[in-house]
Image 1: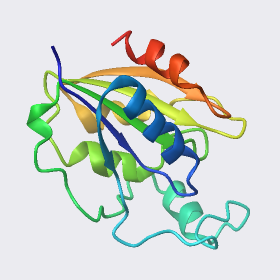
Image 2: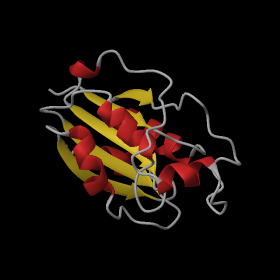
Image 3: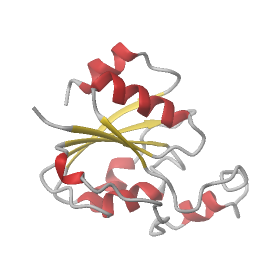
Image 4: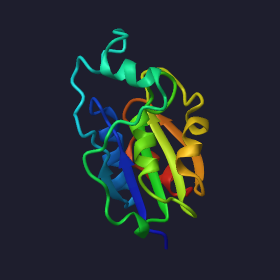
Length: 157
């Protein structure tokens, strides 16, 4: 049996709720991808082109620093990676996370939360950050998925 991990980044708490529920429903370990410098509400103001998130997302090569690394990534075969959709793709901190480890031979299953956007080109934009892994565009969760829905979805992997 494969050992599974749910790793997530959540700026406002929405993705965190889904990730924590997924972790319980699917029996995975849980890891929060935390930025070294936490985002403030002003940083997340997407309507301000000078806000931190707007500046980061306008330069897709930008890699926000992560506060801590997971020491035992080699124990996992399947990693669910969750994040909010920003500007139709994953926040660049997800690239930072993926580029921090060797995921060769592992399965990375993406999940996201969004107020209205789809996955867009998320997987395409993340592929170079996790070479050697099988990258799967998983599911977009809006609202509050129940435990049965999460368990059923996660069992596909």
